[in-house]
Image 1 (cartoon, rainbow, N blue to C red):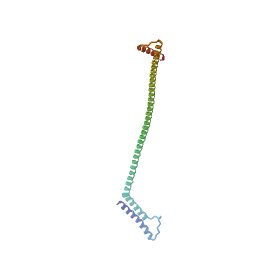
Image 2: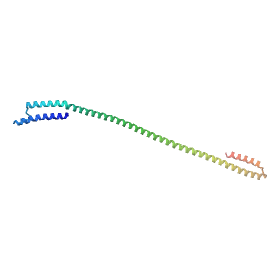
Image 3: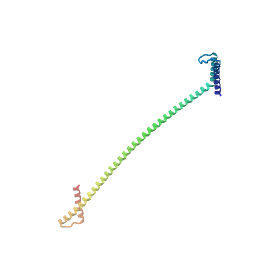
Image 4: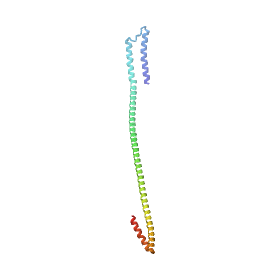
Length: 195
């Protein structure tokens, strides 16, 4: 409704100016746009003032309110954009911190895995050494046992041979008890000499 009022006033003021120009042209006078006519200047001033008053009353206030609303809307959008930017910066910082934490955890896990692998390798080496030493001790023990058995067998054979030779030399048979006593003594002497 306000727009129609303003439009009708503008059309009316334009009509007044156009009517004056037509009247002057019909009277036979030439229209000089640069010439100053007092009544036209008066009525132009009156129409201009009325137009200003009407625009001031009906148009300027809604235009200013519209501009203020638009300015406020733009300010709100800028504030919202700044807030969103702040939030995005915080989120980015959080993601960067999480990424740094993840990298640190991965590095820690890799270091832990390396240390675990080194420990496992050392345990395997230590177990292999212990097994080798145990096997060597077992082999030494077996060798010692075999050596003792061989020595015992050699001593027994030597004692039997010595007994047979002694019997032949003495030409008499020894009884078994004397024979066992003689063998044990010979074995002890033989072992003492070999050790």
